[in-house]
Length: 113
Image (tube, rainbow, N blue to C red; front, side, top):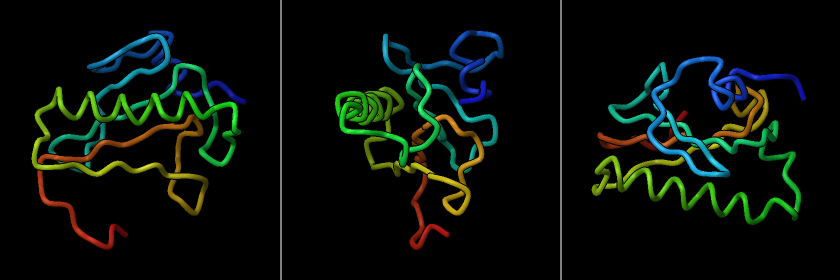
C-alpha cells in the first residue's frame, strides 16, 4: 500500500484537528466538511478499502464503529448522524486508507447521491 495523507496524519507529519485517539483509531475533522459536523475515523494501521478487510479484521471494524459512537456522543449529535464508508472508485473513495465519515448537525437527505 502506498503512503497516504491519512498515514501522514497518524504520524503527525501533516497537521489535523484531532479530536479523539486511542491505540487503534484516530478521529479528526474533515478539511472539506459536507455537514456542520464532519469527522473522519480511521484505523491507525492502514487498510486501503473496506473491500480489503478480512475476517481477522472483525475486532478492528467493531472498534471503529464504537469509536464513531463515542465521537458522536462527544460532539453532541444526540439528534442523530450518518456514517458513510466510501469504497473504491465507484463508491467515491479518494483516499485509499479505510475511513468512516461521521456527518451530523443537520437533517440528512435520502437518497444520498
